[in-house]
Amino acid sequence: MRPENTVAELAGVPVHYDRYRSDAHGYGTRGRPVTLHCTAAFEEKLQACFEELWDVCPLGRAEVVTTAGAYVDKPGAHSKGRAFDLDGLFWSERAFVARNYPREREFYLAVEAVLRKHFGTVLNYRYNAAHRDHFHIDDLAQRGFYKSHRSRVLFLQMILTHLFETPVAVDGIFGPETSEAAREMLVRRELASPGALAGGEALDRTLGEVWFDLLGEVARAGFADATAASPPASGPDETPLALLNQVYAAIDEERVGGWEKTGREA
Image (cartoon, rainbow, N blue to C red; front, side, top):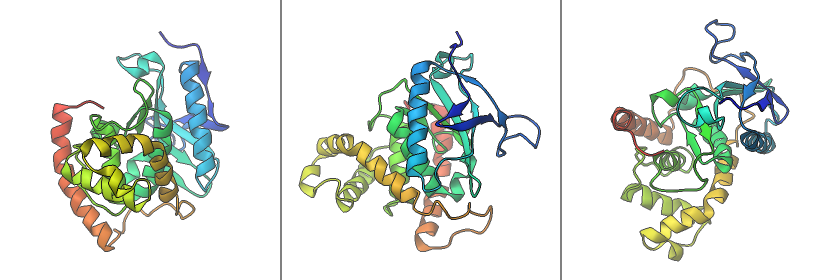
């Protein structure tokens, strides 16, 4: 049943629907104003999330939030009024569109870090093809880090590779490569001491304990260049790290199809 509660603004910013078929209001544009339905409890989390997003992003409060919707009469969190699909954020000086992840990974991951502070389930560009053009967020799962949840491991691998200069395969598997890179990152960022990370269980426990601190670090690092103009649609970055990232991305793209066919816990 559709919730009676409605929302048309998030932390003072109008919400627009951008999935119209016209070029003027289609995906990637500012769309048109919309009133969404969701539970009051879920709206409260959305409002807190976007208030924090405006606080931590150097660009401040956006002018428009674009979405693919909230309540939808289909199985899952959307039918419960406990899900929201985020397509983009528009400021006067910059536009963020989820589909542009390959060109603005750092900014994308900073946005995702804030979303993950407030919601247990966040499905992103690397989760599967269906989520390459939006973030799906819902509150059906607990917040925090769980290595059994593929979407959370993917996010960890993405920040290791694209923010913290410890490239790993972005495959959603919490294996030896990811474990070692996570240990190195936690020590380097002074979120844990080497002695506290001995053994697999110690690493799992520590990641759980420092997860929200790590999300804050990701937001700060990812938004560091937020006031720069949106990246151009062409013109690849040819720094050594960027070239290495491109190699990993090419490998990972070959793996995504397999995950999409088999599926796995979010």
